Structure formats: structure tokens, C-alpha cells
Length: 413
Image: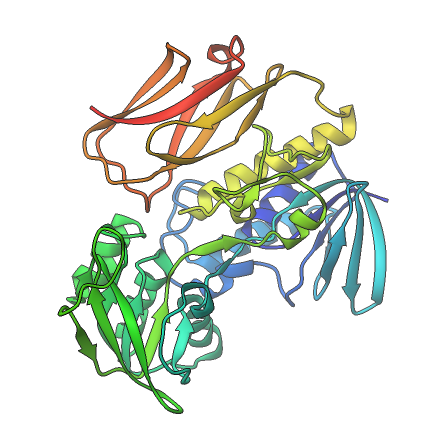
């Protein structure tokens, strides 16, 4: 029996396994379905990674390589080309690997499966079904890992970070990116990516617009874009036709959580990830979750920090058993879409907790209030908040122990 099984060998799994080792566990296995470690980082050849974790700017593969090299000096076992089929609440793990079908057991589990992209089927664009319609991540993998161009005349639907980065990448490789089209009245990506990937290349961003028709027989020949009203319904007379051979979809990411649901772990419908405590433990004792399998992050540095907490907590669980304490609930107030964690152990040993959240609308000068009933526990001033950027609060634990429920609320200043 393993002390810890980590499901997923991307940035979250690597950080969790290394942290667990640093905290005293020695019998650890990473189960990775791909043929190499690194996860999504392997296709992210642009820079901008590692500024928080390593205090320098790295590409995605370089960032993954740092953790892979750190693991080489440990006893952590890595099993590649290994698909986890099922996990159970008593921590049995059923896998399919080059050795065949197996069942392994672990004292603790960390779920770090990452996330996947929404596809055309999830947003129901009318029209024909020609080739040339890709998710932005698929196009990124084709170009950066396989050396294949998705197309030459490109429109991007959605302003998620992968789509924005691919606008720049496709332009640098000689394609003509005609436009980026976003359904919402604000961008879904980081502000820095809007500037560096669209503005710097003169690529227009159409907010409050969507694709209403796809045309083409064997290959995409064109699309129609229309402006939408406050109910996100197309407005007649606002049609714009684009002659293009490629449509990239950057319309959101979904935590990869089939295994989580099948294990009976409580899920948060707002994040599509597991409910977690401050130590990243799920509703099942000894099973932890971290990274994009919990909620979709902006920066891999935050994924690593969160995953290191999960790995350390798994080590604590194996050595000392479950945390037996009362629970403090963390709930969403006005204009807050979700919070992570959603729960807090009242007797936690942590001196402070990190709370991540996203707002539902654009804020200029504002404040975030942490309260319980009419009592203000802490207030954080913010100059600017948008739904596309994850927000982060650090709250001393001693301020929270006397309350049963705390609420996080966003307010105009």
C-alpha cells in the first residue's frame, strides 16, 4: 500500500508529490495518463511562468522541468501511460496501465487531474460541421508540439487566456487573426494578455458579440458574428461576416472531475470542483484535491502553492490521522461567484488561510468585506477587479475561529 497516490502528473500533481515528500512521506506514486510528466505546461511554450514560485520568468516546459528535476532526488514513483478508471471512498484506485488492469491502495489520495476545454457542442453554435473548428488548446498543441498550423485566416471565439495567447502565436507563425469575439461585456482573460496578445498586434476585440453561424462544406469557409443584448441574445441588423478557414474556441475551462464525482465527493456547482477545506481536503477523509481540478486558476504559480498545501496536508493525515474539529463555512456574498476553500477547520494549525474568489462583474475602486452577520472581520481594498482575474485574500486564522459562518462580499468603494 502506498502512503500517497497522486492522480495527475501536471503542475499540481508534481507540486503535491514533492511537498508530501518534503513533509516526510516516502512511499508516493504519481499516476499520469500521458507518456510524460508536465501536463498542459508542455504545450505552453510562451514565457510568463514562475515569477511567484521561482522568482524568474520561465516557459511552461521549463517550469515543469524544475519540478521534474526536484522529484529526481526523491523516492517518488512515477507511472506513465496509466489511466485511473475509478477511485473509491476507501481509497482503492483502479487503473489501466501497460501492465494491464490493476487495483492499488493508498492511505491518502491527491486529485490533480487539471481541467479541459468547452467544445462547440457545449455552446451550440448553429451551422454546418466542417473541419477548421478547434478548441484553442487543441490548436496550441498541434502548433507547439506537433508543428502543425490549424489554419491561415483565423477568428477566435471567447477571450480566455489560451485563446488570447493563440492569437499572438498564430500571428507570429504567419496566420492572419481577423478578430477575437467575446459574448460577455468584459474579457475572460488576464489584462496583460489582452495588451500583449491583441493590442500589440492590432487584433480587434469585439465585446458583447458572438458567432451565430458557421459556413462551409468540407472546410470552414466563413462565419457570421452578431452583437448581443443584455440577455445575450443576437441583435438583428448587427451581422458581420468573416471570410476565414479557422475558428478557435476559447469559451471556458471545466475541472476534470469525473473521478471525483464517482467517488461520491461533495461538489461545488459554482466551480464544478470539489468542496475543500483550507488544507485542500475534500468531503472524504484522506482525499485531497488541488489545482485546476478544484477551480480554474490564472497562474500556474498559484496552482503550485495550493498543491503544496495539499501535499503537506496529505502527509499530516498519514502521520497523525484526520483533523477532528468543528467546521466554519465560507459562503459567497454579493457579486462573488465562488470562494475556495469553502470550509475551514476551526482548530486548524495554519496561522493564516488563503481565500481565492472571482467576482461576477467589473469593479473599479472597490473593497472586499469578510464578515459574519453584522460583524466585519476584515476589509481589503482593491483598485480593480474583473471576472477574468482570480482574486486572493490572506486572512489570519485567529480572526475567524469565533464564527460559524463567514461571508466574502465585493462592494464598490
